[in-house]
Amino acid sequence: MDLQEAICPKCGGPSPTGDICGKCRASDIEWFTCDGRVRLVRCPNCNSMRDNNGWNDCERSREDLEYEAAISAIHLFQDIQKPEISIKLEENSKNRTFAHISITGLLYNEPREGACTVEILWQFDSCDRCSRYHGNYWQGVVQLRADGRKATPEEQERAKRIAYQAEEELQLQGDRLSFV
Image (tube, rainbow, N blue to C red; front, side):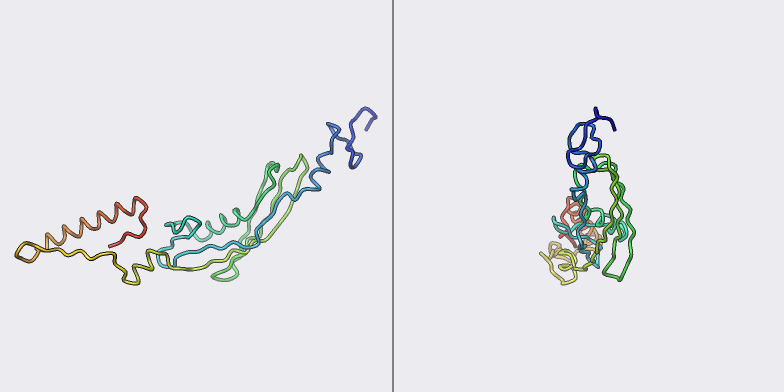
């Protein structure tokens, strides 16, 4: 280091701009945090998942959901560059998994490395739809009648097809509480 180079006012080391160097800036910053626990709520009957917006159908595997939950538990400082995250899942029981997380990245061109563990708790709760369905809750009962006679089997089948088609359209529109 020669006399013409700028120095860091905190450590006395070289600084390209004359301000606090990247090493000193990075040493004072909590560059990541991890939530200690994440709860995932799943319906044991239909495998729907509950989130902040209510119940949603879910076709993803348990392992995929655990990886996503572990990622959501990590909070990185905004200036981290090139973050790399490694997750190792350890299933402790049917209702509990531990995600061991290793994180690396650059903060003000200084390499950073850290680790944390996130506990993923599985809770099982019947969704609104399954709760109503298995509790024999019916919004209404449709009666099929013919004029002065019994309805034929063909008429009964046609009425069933119409009911199931109406239910399918409601399901596609996002109405989870519709069932026949």
